Length: 241
Image 1 (cartoon, rainbow, N blue to C red):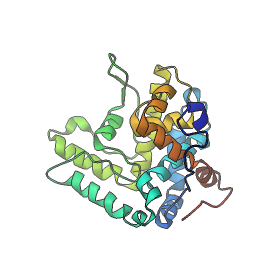
Image 2: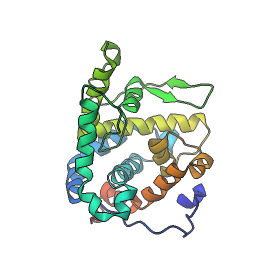
Image 3: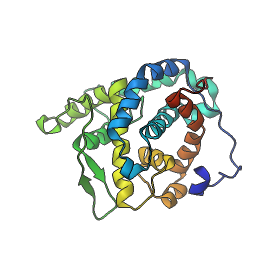
Image 4: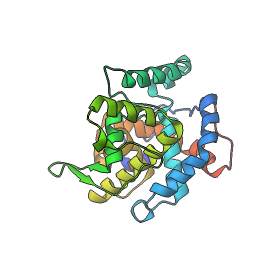
């Protein structure tokens, strides 16, 4: 939990966050529900996560909800209407001839991180650097070794991670990478550990608590635990703005 991570302000000093799910996102999530559950089943490793597939899916949904309503939108609610325009602009920038490595919604992955996922690479603390694990992104057609142009490769990856169903597959695969990283660092897996892995590529609770962005992200994500549970288990309505 947030309290178990020892995050500053988690004992009541921070203002509560009201979970917000845009109507268009809520509709998209309903379309994606089968894909989310299927991706969770493919990429959850219960022996590593200690989670059921539905619990793993709940973490995925928490991340999607959090990524689609940033801290600035929490503070300035009218900006929520502009979020889709901002997301589209970043996709076009990544696909441009200039090339870029902006994060891409709906799951807010950088093309460079998505490339690591396709390659089955898991970054580890120095001096180890990187290991390779058996990992496959369901539906991806990217074969990195066939590219001679790095910008073209990143542009094609951008196209995949901006596709809703493929983005879900990438997200689940990325969380599976987080399971391997947590095993390497002997960290018990929790929803907060996986959320921090997605956000900052770290899993140790002490590092999460000490990292201002990761700790804030986990705090914001905690507001979406209940709506995500409702979505995955279909036992109550999803909160909307």
